[in-house]
Structures are given as structure tokens and as C-alpha cells.
Image (cartoon, rainbow, N blue to C red; front, side, top):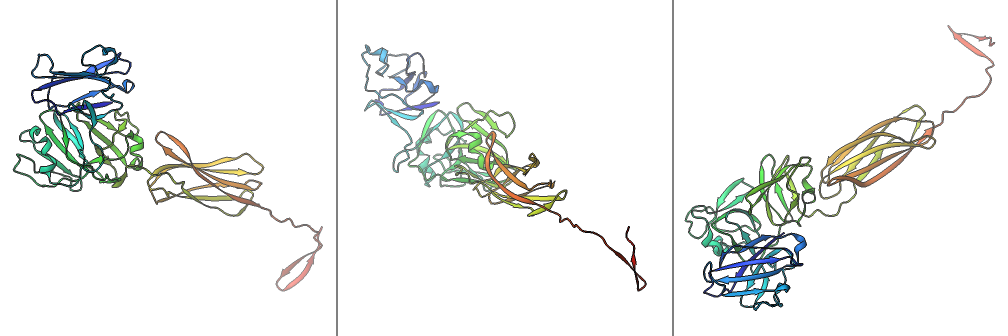
Length: 417
């Protein structure tokens, strides 16, 4: 889990700092080397370490005694700078340590008017700009000093499948001057820093994907398993790639293939390739069972071929893979399966499954069972049935007393023996 901390209100004489966190049982710790005073620190912390104790030291120069120290580690209660009122870090996230108030302040609250921050790593970063529409010169002002010379800030226009260079401080050549809320940007910076740009915009609930090319798009749903995040497009998905800004490594997910991308994180950038144009819905609503319509005769004679069709309609708001099983259940004999069909059905679309059987010597019920694929297993979706009655052939009983032959307009009785 990632914890990012930057300083707020450090004293003017402070030029560098060191930050360390301790697991709650104090058996483990991890920290930074000497950092410049404006540089944030990002630590990868195991989830079972939380809540975290911490220690902070500020320096006027490297290899000198600290000019400011504070810690809340209980075993250091005897230390002169021990302060039990220093809050614990209870969960992953981005924080300021306010030197003036001796408190941690969470970065990126979603309320209007307060600052929003994205942690950028030295080098290239794929990021989702969650702020509101505003001039790029204003939005990029907080990182103007860290923008890599000659590299610029690039916006990915997924509709036109092109990069557009943004107007940024110190960059006279540009394609556009306005920031796109929840747009995807490629930003190169010279050191780790936090990009702040104002309040969050309202996130989109979906994004449109084009076929036969990579779509570089934001994911704005909840952080969750990759199969759940991609549920609305799994039927069309080819591959998804994710670039880790911190490690500069690529990770991917492909259905049915060994993959190293297992979690999709809210407001991260993903490179998505699909086999047909479709809408990626981030938060999939509750599933509605499919509609089933059975077409079969009301009755049939013993030995007669009975044709059956089952029309399935997906009335959910996203596509799913369905497995349809058609069975015949006679009243007097064991049930038997007619057929099983697997088919991906998009939202609002229908599919018809066909089968047939030979009518046994009893009334028979046609049973349709439908299951839906859920991440890694089949689950029950819906079922329907229809009865086919056995036709009884009437028996003719009596005695033949006479037969007649009608030939060339002559009629005579034929003896019956």
C-alpha cells in the first residue's frame, strides 16, 4: 500500500528532511534517505503495518544535526522530541505534514475549493487529471518548476487517436490551452513532486472505446479486481496494459492468459484494446435476470420428433456470457439433456438456442436453465419450463361383416373369412 507525505510550512532554514514510518507493533520500519525540503516521499507499506507511527527530522544541510524532530513511537517516550499527540497514519494515501501545527493533513479531499493532489514520480507519468476545466497555465503552475525541459505536457485525445501538447509555463509551442476534466496526460518531471490544481470535477460513469487500436483512457470506478472492473466489456476485451509511474514498468491483463495485472485502481490510466467498439461502464449496476421465451408444441405423439427453441434476451445494462441448458423431463422416465450452448449476449440483444428430442410415452416438461459467467465461475441467472402433453391415438374396435368391391360401376359383395 502506498503512503505519500510532503511538508507544509517548513522553517526557512530547513533545506532537507528524513521521514520514517513504523509498524503498529514497532517491529518493522521503513524510511527515506535525505530529501530536499520540497520533495515528497512515497513509501510502499504492507497493509498489516497500519496504523503507522512516524518520525520526522528537518535539516539545514546534509550530514548535520537536525534542526527539528518529532516522533510518536511509544518505545521512544523518553526522547525529548516525543509527542504522543502526533496523529497515527491510519490508512494509505497522500498527506501533508504541517510543521506549524504538528499534524498530518490528507491531500485531495473531494470538497469544492480545496486542493487536489497527484503524486508525480521523477521521469514520465501517465496521469488522470481529475480537476475542473481551467486554463492549463493555471492548472500546471504548481509543477512548473519540475517540468522536464523540452518535454512539455501532452494530452491524449482518444477520439482522434492523437497527442496534443498543452500550453505550459516556459513552453511557447502548444496545441491547446484548456484542461480536460478526467483527461489522460503524459507528464515528465525532473523530481518527485505533488501536482495540485484545485477541486475535483464530477467523474464520468463510463468511457467509449474504439476497436482495433489502443484506447488510452481513465478508469473512474472503485478500486477492485480487474475482472470486476472490466465486467461490462469482458466479451470484447483483447488486452489491458498499465504503466506504473513509480517503477516505470508495464503490467497487463488478457482474458484467459497468465497476467500480472490483478487490480484496477480508481483514477489511474489504462491502455485498453477491444475487438469491437463498445462502452466501458465503470460501476456495473445490479444484474437483471435474462428473459426466456420457449417455443414448443403443446402436445406430441409417442415417437414424434419435438423441436424446441429458447429465446434469451439480456435485459441488463451490460453484456454477459450465458450458458443455456435445454433438458426434457418425462413424467415416467429419467430426465435427459437435449443440449448446452454458451453465448455472449450484449445488453438489449437476444439469442435463440435450438434443440429437439423424441417424444417418450408420457407427458414431458421442457426445462431451460441459464447460468451467467461471473469473473471465474458460472452462477444461476434464470430458468423457465413448458409442458408437452402426450397425444393418445384413438383405438378402433368392432367386427368386419362385409367388404364390397366397386369395379367398373359393378358392385358385389366379397365374402369375408
